[in-house]
Image 1 (cartoon, one colour):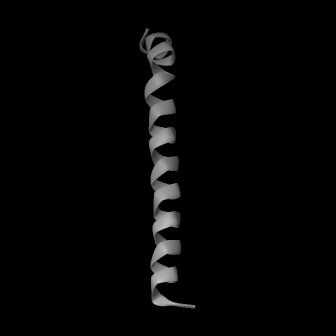
Image 2: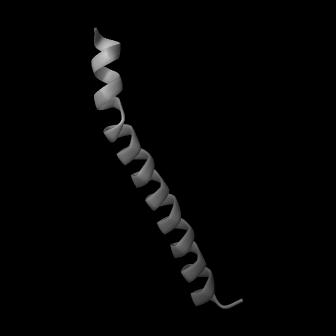
Length: 41
């Protein structure tokens, strides 16, 4: 396995983890607007 391949794989993994975190964060931002209104009151 070449070093370049390892870096490429590492990059892909980091990108997918980063994307997963972004989508999680977006879901968290989108949903609570409705939930927060109910929870606060």
